[in-house]
Image 1 (cartoon, rainbow, N blue to C red):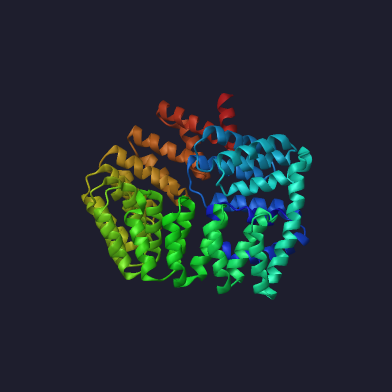
Image 2 (cartoon, rainbow, N blue to C red):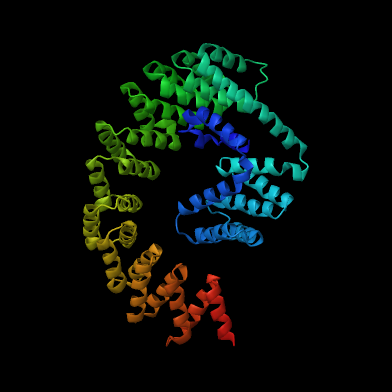
Length: 513
């Protein structure tokens, strides 16, 4: 049951792009319910946690998050709760705080601490109302409602059971007789209707995916007149998918009259789905001006870039040349980096070489570095060899670290050994360390043994402390035991203490004997 309502209550941005599949999901999920959803919910939760961690970057906060993940995997619930509680204290502004709050609640639930779990879930839902984890929080609150004695949530769950049956019935009616189903949906949206919010949402999705051309007038009416912006967005999505050129004028009028930014973004998406010069011209107008709303301008630029049309590159570069706002120019560079047109890469390289803004040059280099293309490596290497701006050179080194290219790795090592200045060498060491594989650590170990500079050795020790490779941990222990510098030995001991690794803790205890 909970799985269906996680779908039905999906946050407004995540809905886009999956709406067409929603109706099909109901039948599949209903079958899953019959097979016993709760029996394998724990396994599903852990798979989601693993996928989330694997898709995230290797930052200090994410390393703490991974430690929490490992404790969840080991079913060490008190330790996992403490790890995620510490995460929220150490990284209160981290982008993954919402996920940490969810997994803190999960670990508390497993210990039977339902009240404390509910408090963290309430905090998540209040502070991050648009988070994709809010749906999971709602599901968990429903699950633990009996333990909390929350009759209101229990009653809502019973009402949702009734909605599930109605949704499946409505899907069947659309398959058997779309005309009668459309009449039924129209009644659902009249004043005084007792249809629930969840049932209405499913009805709009089915109307768009099953109703055909005869459903377009009702979709347009919902898009114009409903007070719920999320229902309007679903209707607008289907107008773009199924309305074709006949919907262009209505969509443009809706856009011009609309005040809700999320709804306007959905109209931009709908217009981008209609391959028509008038729809494209509207997107171009929004990209240039957008009523001075930067988010809408960026959304239009993104959609123009996705279109992969011949004229899109020229149009975007004209906007770039005339634009002074850095965020808009950066969005244009992002759009260019997503294009398959070789001319788009040429434009990015041109900005990287001699753009008029250092931040934009760095952004162009960042996007180029993600391409993992030998020709791009050669071009970035030429820029590096002639560049004098330190920030730009550091960004190029970062780009090299993103490339799965032996020549890029060799260049990073060359800079780490013999770079022009101390800071540049330290950055190269940092990016080699971030790769955190056995080969990278072996390279840094050899560099440490040959190095004379104290500052570089300190940077290397820090890189070892950030690694999950055992050879890095053991190098720290070796330095702590016998390095000729007492300062480096003290630093190695400090980083061993920070690691929390059992082998490191045993080593520290031995030092105290």
